[in-house]
View 1 (cartoon, helix red, strand yellow):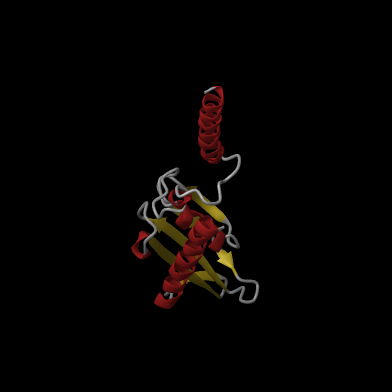
View 2 (cartoon, one colour):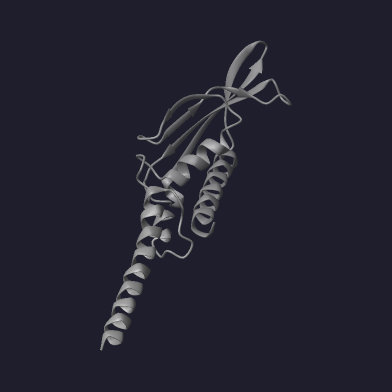
Length: 158
């Protein structure tokens, strides 16, 4: 009889300890100490809607990364606006561009990012506005979206 009781007690203790191990992994993950590899909640970390800032964080980081070669004038993560200063490519110093990126949504969607660009040419010492090709703006939007999707994929699959 005593042996039956000790076996039952051992099984109960093992089941309790097994449950604690899973809980410890989840707590560590929630605290950011150690991510659990097979935790089904990991997919929530890479959801398309990230709201720790006012806009989608993948689009925000991808936009900053894409425009990192240009001097930044204004960044507002809550409003989702990035404004650059004029940038002249060293290969063509008589031309300069200024870019504004606006993130319009908290979801990672193609219509959640809007790029506007201004272009000027130096003619006789005077900067004159010239049109920006629509393909330039579309290409910048595509680059930002591709980087944002890559960031999300790496968060999902490591």
